[in-house]
Image (cartoon, rainbow, N blue to C red; front, side, top):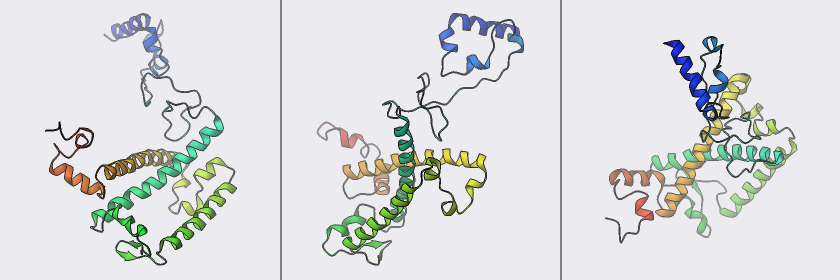
Length: 246
């Protein structure tokens, strides 16, 4: 039976060579067809790409954390641009991972949603609050000055670092739990970070779209409304004119 199975594979390879020799499939590389097929290895591996069957761009070699060959607009063809995009994506991932729980936790605690939390800034002489407590120096001009100086200092320090890897993963005080001590674990954490960061960026885009569709509402309020009446409170309620909706 095993011999017949191997022979069948050999026939398939002869009939459909383009399928088994695809650049996206490691099947042909893992299986040897021909006279020595009986002793060929049985390890079949498939690469997890964003679009199976599509060729990987040559400049995305899979070495970067979270690199699955996704660049349909070919924005990373220029090496300098690619490195900059990697860096920018990682920073946006980290900001989004801070923003998403910052939006969800206060609303879950009944302290208001993220949209109403900004209303004080539109009031002349308004006072900023956080979790219901006044923020020291919480007037808009003062906060803008503090933010400008803080961000300017951080960006200046970052621009002084010329090593691209240290820019993205500075370690030291930014790794108080020592996750970077184990190089193998560090590579695993890098992939997890960028995956969770991409999910957080999508989540925040969802928050913004929901707020635009239902002004003044937060994501948990939107979720509760959807669960209470899934048939009417969904994306169709926004994109389908009410005159033709049931």
